[in-house]
Image (tube, rainbow, N blue to C red):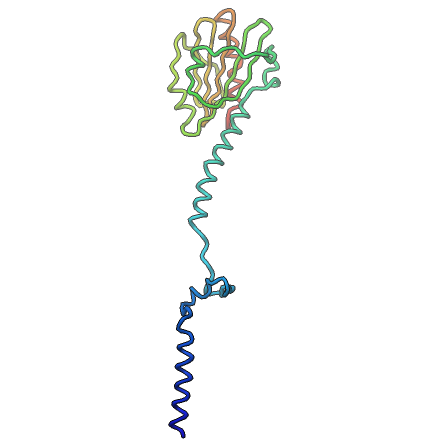
Length: 209
């Protein structure tokens, strides 16, 4: 009798093993099955996606720099309050760029145009460059005419000016921001005096000034 019962038990065990043969025996596969979803135990906590975090940081860094430079450009634009003592008012039309101002490398400048009571014009363009410094940009600009002896321009790393006939231009560079001034008058001496008077005001609005 004992021998017969051993045979019966062996058959039951064999049947149980055979019944599981067609089911996945890999726990990872089992828990990934939608019908067997389970909350991971402490030993199954997924590691954070470090690559996604690094990529997010790398993408946000250029955006942060661009936002900062854009804010610095906006802050460097002259306002009517800045020019209150210069005898100017906002112009309804913008005068054409002279040869020197046109030589400034292209960007997306902000600025304004002004008219003096005498009819002379003042144009300011402020441009930000993300891929290089404003000093590097200024060093690429070569203007003809007479180079100006510049007044003190606190806030500017580099300041240069030129006069060609009745048009005088001053370029002020700091960080990634270049502020350009152009005055067109009835005589070169008047244009020179005007642009030299505005240059320290404009340099005082550059980043860090």
